[in-house]
Length: 212
Image 1 (cartoon, rainbow, N blue to C red):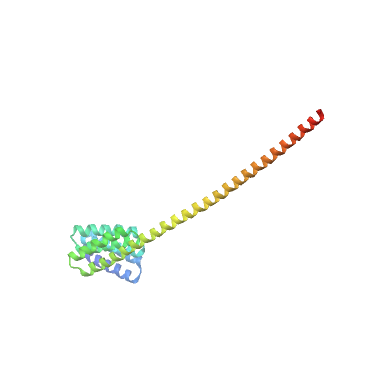
Image 2: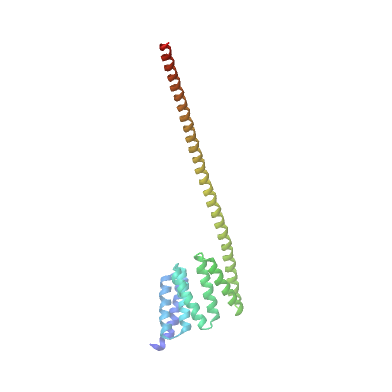
């Protein structure tokens, strides 16, 4: 059974890739998990790196970004320990894709730049060109994101100014109303006072006439 472990590793790896092409991600992930177990039984770091990388891609296709990121980070670490430039480049590329999908454009740009650098170092033109293309898209998204944030800030400022303007207008109306009421009250008080004075003067005149 031990002698057949490498064959089982290869078989499950191929099955995982085949199911992914057929769109059955659950069976794809299951077979890559089996492949990982056989790689561990073989004490094969390269096999583990391959299986974990495949699990990361499958997780990404399933939309399970947290699992995919964890697998890709582990794949990158194993590739670095093996001095596997191709594996490092692929892992960096996939980490960039994951970061971009989650809107983390700064992290995405960092990973795509690393993938492009590795591609240039090992003469992998396809890797380099793809990474540079993805980097360009991410930079465009970063600029657009900044543009949209600027618009949102301007709209928020305009809305705040509009609200303050409405509040000021309402306050001015209330103030004007209070002032008008105060003036009306003062005028009424003056009229009443004048009437009282006139009444008092009339009364005093009647008293004086009676005394004479």
